[in-house]
Image (cartoon, one colour):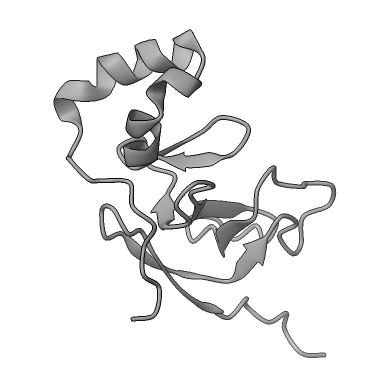
Length: 124
């Protein structure tokens, strides 16, 4: 009998803010080999390279629900509040978020890089 196949990369995820790149094996809400896990957003997912357990995976990122750019889940690039938002969109629409998010963003300000929230041209 053949050994189980390793998940082959489907493509390469790239964060449009920090430049993180990583091969992903799945995009969607229900990663393969997971019993009852359904993600709250369509996400770029890869098998966890640090464990032999095929049920383990890492979420690399998703798309900002406002500007559609690809962003990683890193705290310098995005946040999830019912949907994924890149930090430039959060900052430009800060008053639309709850006070708790506004206060959290105020604490982050010193370490943030400056990016603007613009619909990105994905033709390149």
